[in-house]
Length: 243
Image (tube, rainbow, N blue to C red; front, side):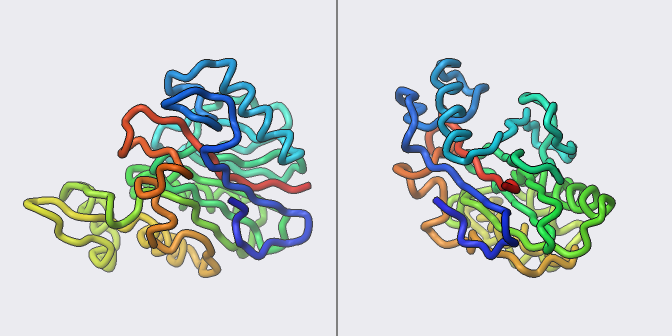
């Protein structure tokens, strides 16, 4: 899909889907993850195809559900450990791989600084978006806009009380993002939780995932990989770059 997002001139965004690659089932076909058991040669070809389509270099990080942030430069290698990244360089795509977690893309309003974060519940509750914005603001970003990609939707994301507590501990209003679902369980609205975090940072221009079914990775098996649904799954990616 092409993110429907108002961006400054020269800035572009992407979100891959699962079609268009060479990987065999259950990674069919455009699996971009090199850590999920797929044929390394197929993953390399899929990544090559994506880069050729973008006319930019997507940097594939080692994502660990943390809050580490790395600045991407021309020499930053794939496999660098971080769950968020930013850059001011042209031709380098800040890229997040996902298969239920939420990719969050940030663009400074002047287009000079770009960033992306990998937001599963642990990373989001742990402050990965705040860490990314602190890095970008420290580099001179004043205001920014955001785009939320596909993720596990609020009808599918069943969590325990510890997840709700992780968010409510610092934001009582986050209670509205959880609905009781069976004994001791809740359904969590991950995009709504991300919007609350962004709003608290003063980032109110947020496009993309609104929590409806078309954005849900679990509910759309022909379009998106989903670890929660399939257990053995590929990864799609979202990112942005300056031409």
